[in-house]
Image (cartoon, rainbow, N blue to C red; front, side, top):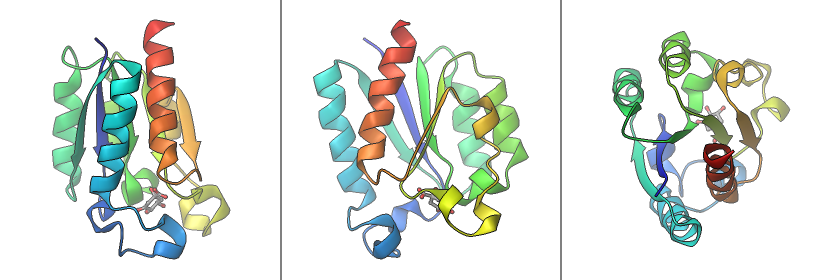
Length: 145
Ligand code: DQA
């Protein structure tokens, strides 16, 4: 059974009330539930986590090798700033999928740079909560290919 780690960065714990016009009304718990349902359908196992701390996200990435087969990450604002997360992801021997609820490329200029994109096998942005289930489908596809 494929094992997929799903990491969420800062402020995503506030989804539901955080700028719903941009991020929608789903809470992170709702998105976790959507992912669990999709994982059941795809026959894979997921571990869904969130942290507001860059170092914790990095430790989770470092520990992923040998335990998971693919990693899905919404690094939130760290997407646009964290060379440290980029470096940690670069060491991983598994497909990495970058996901965003909104499409950062269509927003403020400071969101146009992504330090995750250069190491990502796929990027899914602007699809709202469904972007996570699309990322899961993509992850399974990449693991088996
Ligand atoms: C986000 C986009 C980022 O620019 C922002 O900092 C977030 C959320 C998204 O899912 O659309 O926190 O990653």
